[in-house]
Length: 108
Image (tube, rainbow, N blue to C red; front, side, top):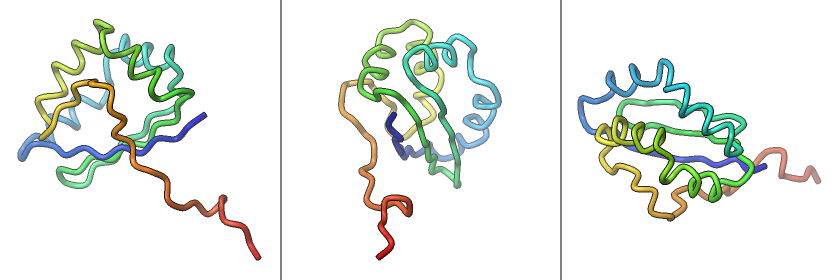
């Protein structure tokens, strides 16, 4: 299991649209995420900045599987225009590197 942290930025004035679309995402997209190893996906928003924390079996495999999946292609066409830089599923891993964790620090 891997925890992945992502950061995206919305276009100015698209915050309400983003929030509305995430009240409930399409069921076929949620099912596809689960089917491809996502155990949890949490999203926080601070102004235009959106923070994602994803718990997934294999992040790269999940992204590869969703790249051409019709439900996800449709979802990305809906959600992508809200971002300053839409996700093109080009294969690059945009995840932030883990620098420190409390549980990973030994008490000496």
